[in-house]
Image (cartoon, rainbow, N blue to C red):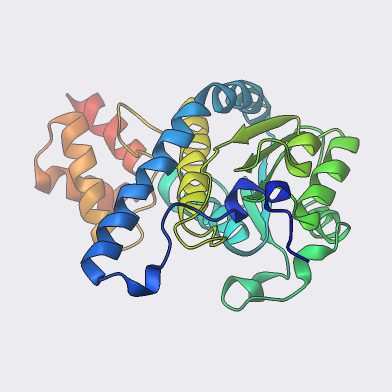
Length: 276
């Protein structure tokens, strides 16, 4: 018996591009690139809900609350990617933004089959962080039906955490379980069901919006400069020197000398401005 395709999430339905194996490299590259615009448009249509969520998130984080991400497969990896970039980019403690993936850290490299099917495992994972009512959980699921994510959101909501989701299915279990549903309707994928494509792109864009806006609101950016960035390697030290120069008008030598002494971009800016 043929499955009822009308009951499938949008991300699982067949798209307009068929017979891909018969296409040339040129045709595939241009067709796939053309469809990528769908992800950007879908995120654009979700901005009001992203804004509403951030208006609830930022006051909690200003009061000491933390931000948690949870997902399975690509969704989990994207959450961990975003969380891991916050300490070096914005100088925050690694515990302030954290991510979990179904199946544990091993699933970052190799798929752990069946790990996402346990709705209780998410709260077990999150409990290690000793969550409080000031904390926030974002569940990430392209299809919107991942039991690991649904279970985590339901448990977090019962415990009083602020909850939200990033999904590409508006009428999904994940959207219903979250207090705020950030929905990017990306529709069918170029390769049917491969949600690492447009759904993954849209997810990353929303994660960028959430974490970057929150960190700006928390005071970790001056002008457009990453003044709390950790200059932990040569490339970042050079960037730090440029940031200091741009903010203070100091010479490269003055900025480098100050940064070598303070090891902190913001402190160097404040000291050099004070000398002016």
